Length: 326
Image 1: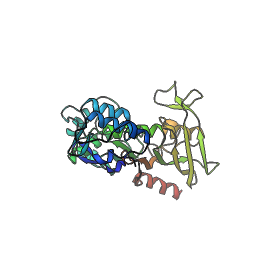
Image 2: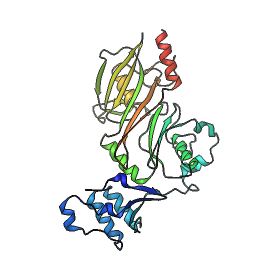
Image 3: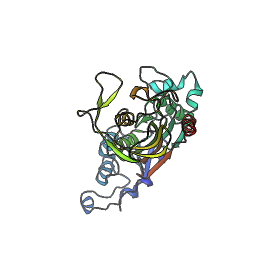
Image 4: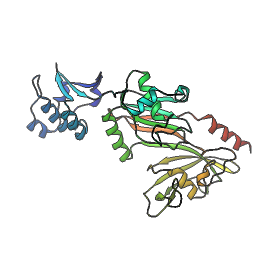
């Protein structure tokens, strides 16, 4: 048998596991090199076994050892994992602590939370992170405010982003290990993001894939465009409903380029309703009609799939109803 990561549990700042669990090994090669751990084993020996069993990323284990973050006491292995920030110096916690309008952040819903990660339902119009030094009212502030509210001031970091005017779930890591694992999951495309959008016109095909590279628009600093020299970008879509002059789409991203959905749909002649930057009209909505519907990610400790769904915002529902009435 090998180590089952679900056997770990939190004890304050420490992630703990019974010593006996680390003395189980599966490959014969490990048994030949490493002796079973005992009460007097040095943290270096614990580190060796953790590395040999591949329990957690080697880079994280080695960094933990270098700062004295591995211990063995009374038959329990401990890894220093849940280290709080200093709210007196951390810039995001300082903004969250001295917020001017608490109601602006308190309207952010918590969709999922445990010791490892947090998923917040970002409203349209709220930036995920400060776009300028000292900017207030961001989702990062809401995440820090949430951690302070539950008395667990951990270093929350967003794993992905949404445009300011896009609503939907945003995933946060609550410790360094979670961030390391979830960043890797993003690179390996194991975090799935599903969106709904309302676009102008009716698509010729009810479902399809847009595989077009996206790069910067050299004529407009804030725009992106389909460009042969850009980065690969893949968007899958399907039509959920058709209106007289518009369509409701569900989209799934394989990549996460800036403005990807907006650029791809504009490129095929169906810009988002309200998306003035990419050719959408604004008489029915003043910002792009795009929302994150669902987020799926592997849990950073157990690797079990977590699925989180966001409720449809009122503005999105009202737009659908207006279009249905035309």
